[in-house]
Image 1 (spheres, rainbow over the protein chains, first blue to last red):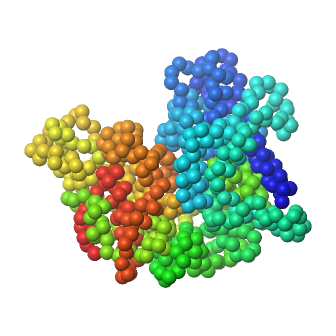
Image 2 (cartoon, rainbow over the protein chains, first blue to last red):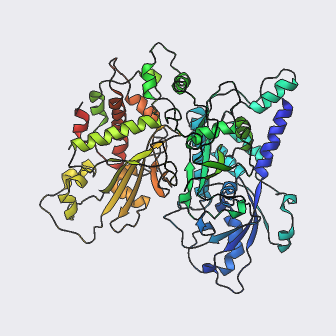
Image 3 (spheres, rainbow over the protein chains, first blue to last red):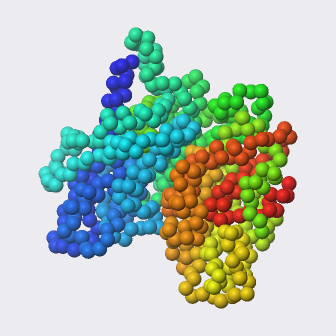
Length: 387
Length: 246
């Protein structure tokens, strides 16, 4: 089992060190010098957030900025970028055909307050991160006491482990450099993060992939599964669904996302049903987007926990644990096996941490390896919808 | 016009389910049933009041959804507090708007004064009750603006609704306000945080009887109870008729 643990650490490290090469251009309206400044080249951590890059970007453009108060925001081809979405997720979602380096524009004026929530720098990002962590804790443990009760120093340490030190590259030769050979020097402190976050006791779900493997090879000295028990059946997930009305053969042919209206943000936990067989990504997608898996919709009471109706039917002598009630509520409805994807809509692409996993992959593997530091699994989906 | 207090609820609520089996949360479907029932009842009993309405909202804005999602909406409520010397005509003549101001100030309204002030700009507020899949409880979103549409900042809102202020809602209590994206409208709104709502709701419903009411009644009462607590924070009140008519 130690080997499996090592493999998991490896996967987490891989995710933690993942980075997006950015080429950041100053918006022309704010260029006051001739010639205009060259873009800033930055390797941005996938798990980080764009406002955290500001300490690197600002000095680069300082000499050309007009006088006045700075309100910094980023934009990709006209679309203001939501700063509370991790950088890697923005890239996976908005760049159908991955663009390397990713050309985005920075603004120091004209903050679009009708679209973007205000951002006052690092504090806003930290607050948003801690809030997400509380949400995740609530989903996993049924309460957010562990996060609320964190000591000030633990909170700071957790946040600093996530905040990354970034490497700025000014050399134009970098454009010719193959980024995969360029390792990020300090992609955040994974060890520190794991140390502090383990105090939060956010239970992970049983790793079905590992237990499937080990049962075949019979490794180890009979140690039990290190990943722990299935404490709850809810997994924190944030789903970003891009609806396209046109069909396409090549990702390059897809038209640009020009408005956040085209993207559905589905912030709902996945409820895992342990029915003996492996719970796959496919099952998770059916759970989150039932409308794309069957011509008849599944009743939403099945998806969102216990109904009062079910509670009232349970006799009072029953063991009154919430888990028991929840299971009975969910099993009260037929689990409709949809073996085809609805002809009216088609899932074209699923991306998690830049990876496009197969639908058959055990969902638990994704959860145990591809979570962001906020303990959410961020999933980008592209669907083709009817006109 | 009476303010629905928690004490009133203890006496009005006759029956709840066996609380041991219930953790204070509801499903999305339950929320919708309760909300529809609430909106219907509100409209039938309180024609003088601005109505709460259920706004259906598809899960994906670009796809007609089979699932009926949505939220409860109450909009264009004037939250400007009239002060003694300077009363605006509008808040006088429209009973609906008047009712939603904080009840403690009702005594200060001087019926005889109808001077329109040029300096006293009116502030309005929209309230949406949205279901949270994470916390499995209703969540209040609000947005305030001037008559010209300019959005209000939190400190401006706090002046009109002091119970919303960070001083009145310390983080250790069950609610606090943050600015977040509205789940359906995708614009910045203010949200009253639900952490702790379920425990609160469970407490509120403690001491049930054995008689089982109709499901809609139960869920409607759930929302009423939720409103009684949350509403106090933003100065929304519930007319007594809603409580008494059983």
